[in-house]
Length: 549
Ligand code: C2O
Ligand code: CU
Image 1: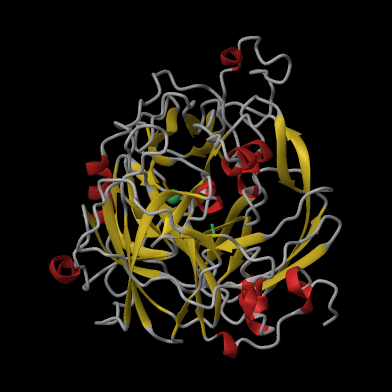
Image 2: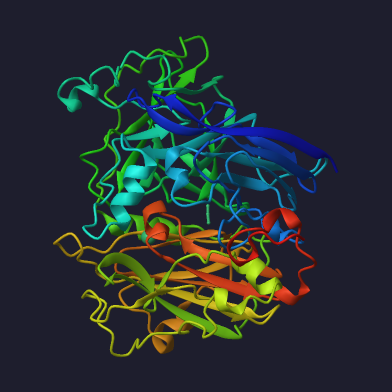
């Protein structure tokens, strides 16, 4: 196995990724950052210099389980103290599973500012994957705002509540086009549609007849997306690092935190180029410029715009098609371990939006998560009990009587919750969606939930309220996919199972940046006593400030 060393300078730079100039958090001057490539079993070492001047940072390796390195998960407030301006921090971890993964900032809402990228782990030489292709390319999907991350975060946490609003544009591999004329005065120099930095990127150039693997990841902050390539179908073969039964789709619905590998064969008229496009689904897309890219055939100018009108995307409010597609994905037989037959514990997790102390929050079973000043992992290893809640949050809610079609009647609390799980135990999580009515109308949002440190068997999705008696028996115990991010559809439920076999403290949260910022997450602890002595580099904030280790 090899060790891959990377040195990253994290700094603010003026960028015009969608033609509108704003401050972005960059890695060595770039947003998105470089793609990390490694082979299963390799060690990745990333030395991070925080050159943001006035802002902390922390970087999470999304989908990497961090076995034997729970302190390298990069989650500020959970697994480490933030990296202060001027400081250097080194992440070191083993990539123990092949697959398509990502990385991104995990401090405040910093991901919104563009600190992100992809992390690809290949199978070792000699290992044959259950599908063939000629070459591979990466596709990173994002949404992008004119407003800075500070504007967004302050708005969300202020008592008057200013919503971040819909993004101005969607980016594909860090490029997009915001129509500057929408700014009235043309943006006053801050916006120019002729900047070379923005525009529709060329995805790649295809040789007719060849088959390509696209490794697609979404790190959107708010948006759920549909991705498609005009005139071509995509065969989905991998999701979050696990092989799925090959499934042909025209539109791939992809939620923030998910990755997919799709196979695309260049089998159309090679004398022209084609559009690739991302569109918002589940929220009103009309304020957002779609993401577009050029799928080029060799011999054409790779930047030549396709001669056709770009695809319009599917109906944004067609929840049924999205649930159907979620249900289509099952494990490729023989490649994914089947789930344990039963669980030791089940948590029913009610997702609500609450007004708490004059602030709009998201809460799980009435508890809205805020990160303690001393990260959970540090607090637990140092015996600093007053830093987090000693009484665990509720395992369930009153599911017999609760009306999910109305906003919550009680206010809830903001605190530092933690579910303490027996190490090695099998845990079922059932996410339950509800109606929210914060902006004057009743809606139920889409929430992609991401589990740190583990993968989950996805046992099923349903509409309405999960009933343990009636629905418990309908779950897919035969060939569920495993994922690290699973979507909760509007007014529906999602059931997953996982084995709490990774000693440490792990965040489980909605991957929408404004939602987790407003408290939409929970924390799991399992076997923290088995975690060896923590590296001194993660310590030094909160109650451990000024201590020497
Ligand atoms: Cu990709 Cu905790 O997130
Ligand atoms: Cu959410």
